[in-house]
Image (cartoon, rainbow, N blue to C red; front, side, top):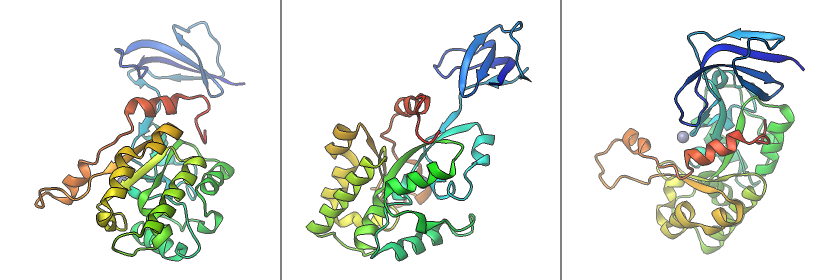
Length: 267
Ligand SMILES: [Zn+2]
């Protein structure tokens, strides 16, 4: 196995400790030594003088789930040093898709992301687990922490219909969320300023519980919900301002733990 040594860099190890000068030896996908490694042989040596050597960055808010199926190497992420992405944000995830509403969901999402790249191979999945299985099958570069999107779950059950969900529709949505999490979703995201999430204005009990205290998500799966705030209480606030105030309930610490796991998904 080739050994790589990154020499003469300033190491920031991600713990919050001050940077320190050191060499880093890597074998395969493992760091095997950090320190003064002048006497250690390596097949590849990288001189990092006047540069910082750090663990890969985590992009906490990514929509790469809509690009990874067609650009699996994710070059633009890796060039920025991003090695883990938390996807499925803003209430949008590529799955689940259901037969009765699949066409309208795909059309709406394609319109939202139009021009970004080649069309996604939507026919390759319906369930959340099938989507993740597709990524695994084609092989992708970054680690992925997938969330299931409330907007897409809602659209799967009731299309882009504005107005309140019936009790039956709410039950089906909750079933979809549980199923997605059983199949690999780490949590649930909402984007209540975007349709169809914004139509959930009539479903306060549902959305509030989903976003904040839906106990089954955290208790059963150890996962959290990520929420983008609903309309600002001050109507004059700009949409951009509202988006900036999106709150993340997944702590950075939790994401670091996920990213650092040797068995991180889709590595
Ligand atoms: Zn977003």
